[in-house]
Length: 333
Image (cartoon, rainbow, N blue to C red; front, side, top):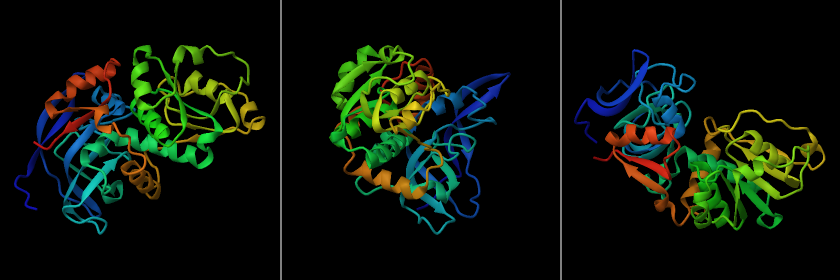
């Protein structure tokens, strides 16, 4: 492949007089270090962490100017690594991408080769970004849950079910034959959740107002929790004997107030999901399952496609909680 230009377009966030502003800039390509690859980005996707980075959240991004984008998929343009050759299609998600390393809201990303995984043969680049970090996190959660809980054990709760991780978890679990209870704060999304495969929809307010007792009536064989806080507390307290709960988010709260009773009287297992530094051997397993037996039939229907110039508007909608479905950024033109 011939590199025709030493510059490329990127959506940059700049800090000006204490305010954070986003715009499209021309950037210079850097020099590759040992074991780095240059990826021509075809698609990226918008995540809540990107919106935080774009609004100056120093817990996500310390230094500006900066290019957000924790997800990217594309082709290897240059390689200083034995892991990849020029022209190979790769997915790059998590690690430090889009946080303190310039991310996928650009025509090129330059990253350590160890951050990349080959795109599965039965997955398109666009599908990879419909999944993105959200899909990888959902896949990790499903993998750990299904290792220990069979479909005939009972209902599986999924909290934050209209979000990226939650919606994909509902779809995958339903496809695998599980009876899914979707937990959401959005009553208007009931039909959408049923269309994803949920058998029941439980409003967030209902589970938040469960009894304060240390143990509650068993309702679920297991759960995938994406929100934390009181909802995670009450899911754990409502999980059957030898049940399994995975935990991957804290948008409600990073704190939980529990006794040890669910763990020592019912043998409930709580499994943490770390999508940022998940071992590569398991990433490959999850991506290949997402490409094949776990792929939801309606995957293409779960996203909206945008261009680089649309990013700021979508970030503002996401921060207001008004963005529905997955948002995929097309960088092919």
